[in-house]
Image (cartoon, rainbow, N blue to C red; front, side, top):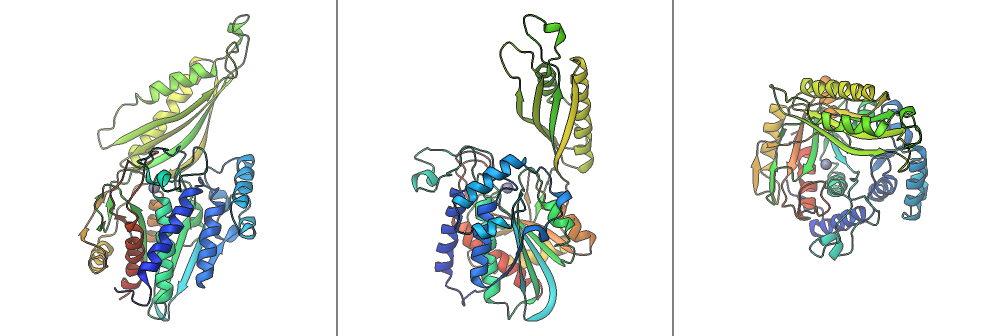
Length: 432
Ligand SMILES: [Zn+2]
């Protein structure tokens, strides 16, 4: 569809500058205070109805919430970097994200769209070849960076909302655009899903940039190969003691954790499909001459089916428990997030391909791409299907300067304008 009511060049420029603004102030899962406020402010200025704060979440389903001290610091930082402290106040305690709704002028189906808005815990490059550094929008926050393109997703969501809003008299039915917090660590979708935002959706579209799609102007109408994943913090509790005077009185939590770490990587492969395991962090001990009392590891498992991920999770817990036992330590695990695997609905994929062929800027449409990692969009997709709707996850092509989750990650910003047109075209077109 053509969006000739809107000055597309001006909109694209505006979306790129929003992306750069979001990129410069990245916020990790459940701390997207400034990012959410910026999105809400932008949408409200356009005249859109936006919901945020407590009413959009189910508190018990907000997985992997940071500790209250971290939330406090991030909220304070966000207020100092935003002109909308009033909006940030409503997100107190990590209740971030927002939902925009556009009611059409004619009766019809409900279309759901999700974009994620959180960043990664990655230190951004200061290399001259890294454009965000060279052009002055490198992350202002240590060890935080938009290295997965969620800054682009947020801008694409804003652009789509503006385009659909401009044509709402022609829209049949209703469109909901969810700006989801805490996708990294697959933590945020469960809460929004449980709150029922997607249960009434006849059609649902998720979007990601650049996953195995590196050609500008290309788009995949669906994704395969979602990996199911479980995130856990594992805590080993031992006993401190003088390392010279009474080593036998101690219980070495670091030794237990190190033993667990190596053996976690040795879980036998599963014959029925792919599996992954990672020990991402290990923090232990207090001093050179003290038997370490505590060790904490952040680990994750993945599998190409929910069953294989379950196998990895069960094996991981057994190994941690046994390693703790070897050193006379206690073991405890904290659930931090989970997502399953799913497939996109074929009839919707067909329809999506048809619509995508007519979107300005799209040069090549493919049926599917290999997603190759986990995403809690699957939680939403399963819920939509459970309630009788259809769902797909599209992938927008863009060249990348480095792999996802790398400090040199960057993409072709043309994908933002294209993405906005793609989502708006799908939302408007699917009901025809
Ligand atoms: Zn991502």
